[in-house]
Length: 104
Image (cartoon, rainbow, N blue to C red; front, side, top):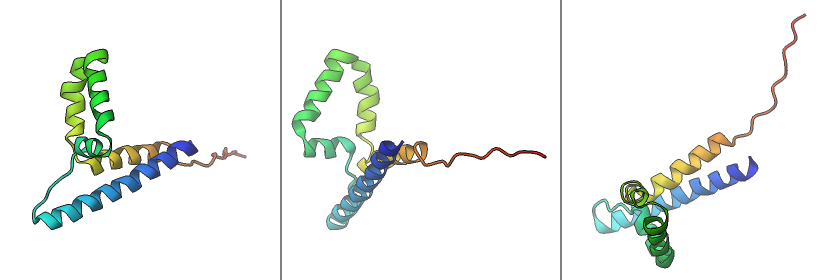
């Protein structure tokens, strides 16, 4: 649970950083320029992006790449990171043990 919370908060922090970066680039360009998850990944590590794409298409299942993965990779990077982070934080939140109520 602790690791899930930490990973969730790290993803939420990454989402804020990506949203800030997108805002700065949009202000500099004069119009909104969203950065998709695929663009961010390809800019960060192009070799792994190519390798994962080829692996999913060729070795796993081609329809998994084309309609599903490409759709997710076209979403804004901050929304994917923020959504996953929020889900992890909510699923792994600390819940103190409940006390049993005794009826006397």
